[in-house]
Each structure stands twice: as C-alpha cells, then as structure tokens.
Amino acid sequence: MALIVVVDDEFLLADYLASLLIDEGHEVVTAAHGRAGLQLIRERKPALLITDFMMPLMTGLELAQAIAADAELADIPIILVTGGQGLIARDHGDLFDEIFDKPYDQSLMIEAVKRLTAIPRNEG
Amino acid sequence: MVEHLARLTTGVPGLDAILGGGFVEGASYIVQGSPGAGKTILSNQIAFSQAAGGHPVLYVTLLAETHDRLFQSLSTLSYFDNMALGDKIKYVSVFQCLRDEGLDSVVKLIREETQRQSAKLLVFDGLLNARDRAETELDVKTFVAAIQSQAAFVGCTVLFLTSTRLQESNPEHTMVDGVLDLSDELIGERAFRRLQVRKSRGSAALGGFHQFVINDDGVTVFPRLEAFLPAPSIHNPPSSARIQTGVSGFDQLTGGGLPEGSVTILMGPPGSGKTSLGLTFFSLASASQPALYFSFFETPERLLMQAAAFGLKIKPLISSGAAEIIWNPLTENIMDKLAHQLLDAVKLSGVRRLVIDGISGFERAAVTPGRLVEFFASLTNELRALNVTTIMTWEVRNLFGNAGTSPLPDISALLDNLIVIRTEKKDSTTKQLISVLKLRNSAFSPSDFELKFLASGLSIASVDESGTSQIEEG
Ligand SMILES: Nc1ncnc2c1ncn2[C@@H]1O[C@H](COP(=O)(O)OP(=O)(O)OP(=O)(O)O)[C@@H](O)[C@H]1O
Ligand SMILES: [Mg+2]
Image (cartoon, rainbow over all chains, first blue to last red; front, side, top):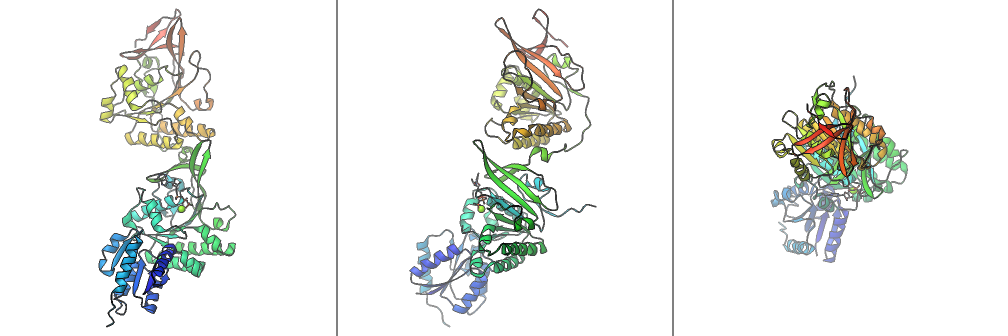
C-alpha cells in the first residue's frame, strides 16, 4: 500500500489507471496537468508519480525536471506514460524509472508499480 | 490602397484558393459538419502543415475520445508525423479542467498555454461540449469571445470544431470571422463530400459548394471550376495560325487545319471514327507541340493498339515526353477534379494539342447538370487562353442518318468548330460521312466527305452524285 500521484489531462486514462491502482490496494490522488501535479507532490510526498507527457501548463518532462531539481522530491520514482512522444522522452531517460507507450499492458504497469514502490525510500 | 491581411496557409490542396489565400492570421473560424464529415482530419492536416513549417500549434480537445485513439486513426494519413507530437504540435485535453473548474478556468488555461507555446494556430475540438456545459447562451458567447480576443492579441488563428450546424443567428456564428461547413450527402446512390465557406470576413472566398475527397493524403478540395476561373488565368491574343489534324485531305479543305487555340466538337455515333480522328491529331505531337489525350473510354493500351492499326507511332512520343495519355475510367468521378487534373497537366507540359474523348465523361460526373454550361465556358475559355487546340468527342446515339440537334444545345454555342460524322448504310455497305458545320473565322466547304480508314492513315474523299468517292489530294 503506497500513495501514488497520477497526472494526466485525459480524464479517461487518469480515472482508469487510478481505479486499477486502487484495486491493487494503493491510495491514489490525481491531477489534470503538470502544474497541479507538482503542487500535489509537494503537499503529499507520494511514494510514486505516474505522469503523462503532453499536458497543458506543464508537460510530464517539465514536471520530472522540476522534481529532479528539488532535493526534497528528487528521489520519488517516476513512471512516464506517453502517447507517441516516446522518443523525446527516451532522450531524457535518466529522469524516468520507466517509460510506457500508450496503450500499455496493464499487468506490466502493475508489475512496475510493485517494483518501484517496494524500493525502500532513502530517508536521509 | 487595399490592405492585404496576412494569411495562414492551410496546406490543404484547393482550400487556400477558396479562402482567398488561406485563413486570416489571428482570425477565428468555426469548422462545422456532422460526425464523420472530416473536421478532425481537415484541422489536423492544417495543424501538421503549420508544424512542418515550424509554426507551433496548440490542439485542445474537450472530447471523451483519448488522444492516442486520435493518433491511431491519424497514423494512417500521410501527413501525420509522430516526431511533431509534443514538439511543434501539442494536444491537450481540458475536459477535467472544464468539469472541475468551469469555463473561466479553461479560458485561462488556454491563454497561458497559447503563450507558453507561442502558438500560431489553436484548434479547439468540441465546441458542442462547451455549449452543453454553459448555463446560458451568453456563457458560450463569452467563452468564444474570450478565446477569440486573447488569440487575436497574440496573432494566433483559431479553429472551433463543432458537430452541430450552427444557424446564422447563433451568437458564435455572428462572432467569428468565418464559418466552414463540411457536409457528406447522398445524391441518388452516390455520396458526396462538399465544403462551403458560409462566412468570410475580411476576404472574398469562392462562394457555393466545392467537392472534396478524403483519402490517405487527408483532404483534397476541388474548387468549383467556374468560381475558380471566372475569367481565364492569362490573356493571350487570338492566333490566326492553323494546327494540322493529320487527316489527309482535311487540312487542305479547311485552309491548313483547325484554327490554333480553338475548341472543336467532333460529333458522331459509336464506331464512326471519332477516336481514330482524335488519335491522328494527337500523333502529330512534337517537342514544340506537346499533346495530351484525355480519355474516358479506352485505356492507354487500347489507344496505342488502335493507333498502331493506322501506322501511327505514339509510343516513342510518349517516351520522349511529347505526348501523354491520361485515362479516367467512367466510374464515380468528380467533375471539378477532372477539370483541375486536365488543366494542371496542360500547364505542366505546355500542351498545344488536346483530345478529350469524350465530353460525356464530364457530363456523367456532374452532380448538378444545371451548371454544365458555366463549367464548360470556364474550361474552354481557359484552354483558348492557354492557346491549346482542343478536339472534344461527343457521342450521339442514332447510328444512321442525320446527327440531328445536339443534346446540349447551350454548350455547342460555346464551341468554335463543329464537325459531324455520320454513318450511312447503302446496299449493305456502310460509309462514314464527315462534314464541317462550323469553323471559327474560316471559309469551309459544307459538303459531305467520306472518311476513309486506310492502313496509311485517315483520309477524306469527296462524294459525287453517283455515290462513288474520290480521294482528296492536296
Ligand atoms: N484513409 C482514409 N481514406 C478515406 N477516408 C478516410 C480515411 N480516414 C478517414 N476517412 C474518413 O474520414 C471521416 C472521418 O473524418 P473526421 O474524423 O475528421 O470526422 P469529424 O467531422 O471530425 O467527425 P466527428 O464529429 O465525429 O468528430 C470518415 O468519414 C472516414 O470515412
Ligand atoms: Mg472529430
């Protein structure tokens, strides 16, 4: 059981992923764009962030960069879910722990979530 | 001095001409049409064309459909470029923003995102949903006005896509600078896609309906010919030169052949020799007189075989580029598409000899026969201005006897020359009789001549009282 932030402007995908994760026993909060997502992450310090790439106000890439630049948040693992921008995202592979192209295999997603939330957080 | 507004080109073949050069920069438009009419394919085509030119685009959706579903369907189109996604074109959904925070927040989000992207084009797909959400008419009006004015401020052109047909009295309709109407209709058994610019502020658009197609290259529009070419594109003084037909005896009879830059109708029943005569004229193609055979009936292979039977050597002319055959089978055609294809080919190779075999290929493709006269007027005026000497064949049904009155009398008034072939049957032998009924600015002999099909080519012979004929020697 972990707290996961899901950021996606497309509500169908955000809602679907959220219910999938809730069924796995996680707590999920969602945001509709990167800027709202960043605020949520600062407030809640989740165990994992799953973000879309193309979003208004702040993209998934910009969100990941903002997190990496913030010492308090930098060790939160990030899964990027993209719809066709996989190549741009893979140029910044160091920012993401996993990259999924839409549509993705949900069992692989659950597996990745399990693995990344099992990593003990460095509390230093 | 007349101000010319800066334009955003659409990249959609035919559409810029209809819009008078493209969309007006910073102006806003409604693109409306029933589901499946092509709004999404059209606006994405414009978006990718802008992106390819280096101009950022913001594509905002209010739809339940996901973006990857949209990309999946767009990926079958040649203009779709995966690499532009998230780079020059950004797709964002404001559905949640609208649901959770309302129209005001959507307006604010779009303003910020337009500036962040320095977008030159904003597409807003799902105006209908915005309407459902708005409590009053005034709300949508305020919303459209806000998006429109903030985009105009930064010189960004806006397309609002909606699947409802907004009436002219609709507030959105009155506010935007232009309205593009896409429709998909059935006329008889056939489906037709048509586009109409219903409103166009600040520029003259080509009015009325224009047919378009959707295929793997997206949308191609065929501007209605008589609206596109109300007058010829260039001015050429009429020539007094003659263009040989290659029919032995005929050129002597007509003072050297057909007047240069004239349009001839060659009328006759099936099998009377119209195609043979056309091929003879076509076979005189050369580097200085390129020729085009625009065929609806025979395939290029059959035309070459038929030509070979009269010793006409056309293959080398085609290889050298002096001659070209374009074949459009008589299936479902679009009249304006045919005309644009014909004129483009004529201009591309500087065609001087043209055979259209036959006129009914255009006639059959007409959705509304009422416009045939205007259509042929602009087509023939343009061909004359381009100094093309044209022979159009016209098949008439009655095999024997007098050709009678032409089925389209209004059109024959638009022609310069009229030549008729009829089939005469006497004592079990059939003869083809050819006569000139009209020849522009020329004296000609109105009598009947026999058209002979010899291995050495076509020739004409005079017919005397006894019914025997004499080969005309020039
Ligand atoms: N490759 C293709 N070749 C030919 N036709 C195609 C092709 N791809 C799509 N179409 C046609 O394009 C149409 C879909 O157009 P589009 O999605 O732009 O409609 P729309 O006006 O946006 O509809 P809606 O209001 O439902 O969003 C369909 O009628 C489909 O048949
Ligand atoms: Mg659509």
